[in-house]
Image (cartoon, rainbow, N blue to C red; front, side, top):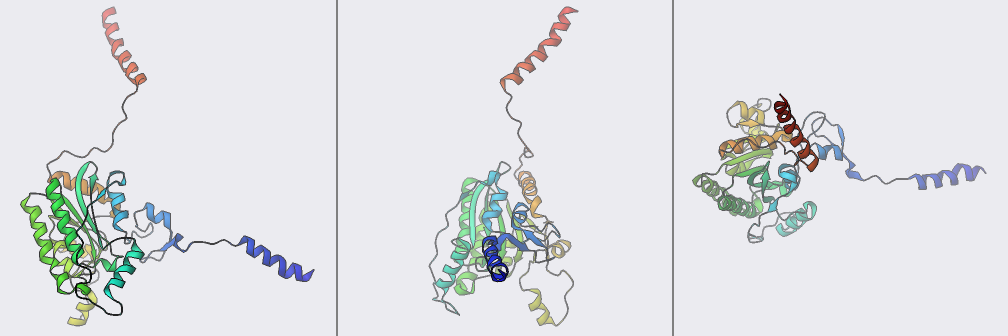
Length: 315
C-alpha cells in the first residue's frame, strides 16, 4: 500500500494534472520588468500598462490599429536582385533572408499599404525591426519609391513609420544608394503638394536617419525612441566623455528642436487625423455616425411636430 500510495498515485495525478502552458502567454517589459499578459499587451498596442514603455510592434499590427476597421490594401513592391554581392559572413546572405522571412512571416523589412484613417485616405509604409533589424536595402528603397508613386497617383498624403538599425551591410554600396533614391521620392511628394509625415519609432539610426526619416513635413516620435546616426556608445568611445542623460532620445530631440511632437502610440491615430486634415484643408473628422432612424422613430418625430400645430389651431 505504501508503494501505491507514495509513488503510483502521485505519478498518475501528476500525469493527468499536467497542463502545457505556451511560452508566449507572457511578455516582460524591458523597462520596468513587469510581466504582462499577451492579450493585455495586444489590446494596449504594445505599450506597457505599468510604465508606458513602447515595445516594438510589427507593421501589420500597427496598420490594423491605424486604419479604419483594420482594413488596408497592400501595395506591391518591385523585387530587387537577390544577393547582388554574393555576400557571406557567418552565413550566406540568402540564408539570412530565409531565416528572417520564416521568423517574421514577411517578405522583407517594409510593408506598404493604402487605406483610410478616420475617413482620411492615406498611403502608409512601415519598417519591421524584427526583420534583420529593419535594415535599409534595395527592397526598402523600392518600397519607399513605390509608396511615393502610389501617393502621387492617388493624390494622398504619405505616412512613414521608421524603425531601423541603418543600411544593410550585406548589400554594401547598393544599400547606401537608397539614401538619395528615397530623398528623390520625398521630393516627388513635395512637387505634388502632398504632405509627408514621419513617425520615428525605437530605434531609428544610421543611414535611415540621414535620409528619408528626417525629411518629413511633420516629424513625430514615439516616447523614449532612440533617434540618431551614430549610437551613444560609439560617441562616448570616440569623445571619451559621458553623454547627458536621455541623449538622442525622442524627448531630448524635441527639446532641442529636432522633432515637432512626441506622441503616445495610443493617441497617434487621432493626432495624425488632425494633422492630415489641417494640411489638406479638410474639415475636422467625424467622431462617430448616428444610426439611421427606424420607421418607429420617424413616426414619433412626425407626431411630435404635429402636436404643436394642433394646439395653435385650437387657440
